[in-house]
Image (cartoon, rainbow, N blue to C red; front, side, top):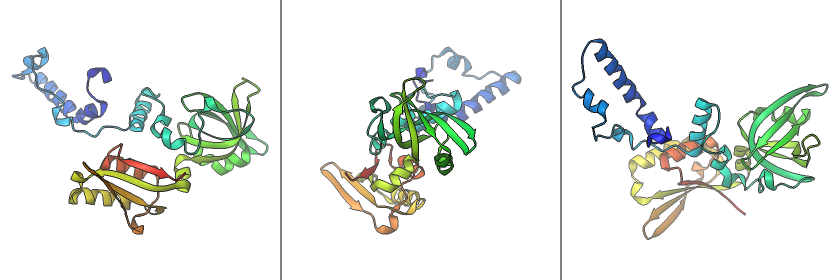
Length: 272
């Protein structure tokens, strides 16, 4: 669809109009009617942009784009999901899989590409294939760890695995005996110092303030302070919101804030 020269989010926004237009053409054809402008449109001679009304549709974030590809096509085409959170992931897992050394404790982040559950006398265990775009690693999760973290062990989920690295005896690649599993959201909750929102001063009005307040209210009650950075031509001013606006730094809030403020205007800040 990218070869059409129109962004996918614009095409999706225009889909309902396109369906209605197609239904109208089909109805007219069935009734023996001809659109007065049908020949002009069909011949491609019109200079009118059929997507003009929808050009202002909100651009998708990378993760939205990749999720849409996975849902419709069964695979990721435009990149790797970890690219959408690469900078944050490196706060917890400094090395990519291809950079990891064997024989030592490590935290490794990646997407669960495959998971095999095995029944043993001690209970279920799992073998994961973890992929971070630089390489793959097999991780074994024994029954005690599996029972504790099984809700996080889902295909196509980004996770942080902590354990001992070693050489895979079967294929010579990298393997891990997993001791703990965390989601990125859980790791963020434990270490984030603040949520920073960068907003151009000209955007701040009653409508914007209401939208922002409604969005933040969905996650208040946490320990993460919110800092507003108002950007002007001559500089910026940072204002820390009161304790009543401290939030749980979850992914749902991040998604909603990116819609309200902008994809590049939202940032989790970590100390150190």
